[in-house]
Amino acid sequence: MLPEIEKIDKELSLLEMRYSEVIASSQAKCSHPIEALRECKYEKCDYLSDMPPCRVCTICGLLAEGWSHLEGNYPKMQPYKDVPIISRGELFRYVRRT
Ligand SMILES: [Zn+2]
Image (cartoon, rainbow, N blue to C red; front, side):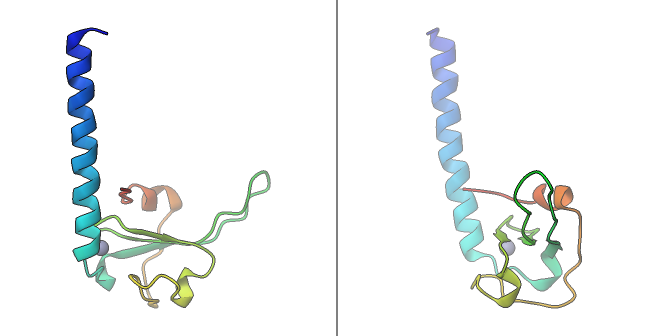
């Protein structure tokens, strides 16, 4: 492999590791205030599995998804009423995964 490509591959790998560390740390510290939360609703799908409701913190990108997340099974995101509902596509633009 060309040395320039190897160098960039190493740089990308280091950046990906750093990115994951920053996201994990930010999500652990974030209080996920209700003002920053957005949800999308359950969607029935005829050709794949139905898609569960999801909630995201727009500050840190933490995603909670599942059939029961609104009942409080996700300790970092307590159930709230009146969380703005947005489309699934818009919601996933906020998501940050480690
Ligand atoms: Zn958050």
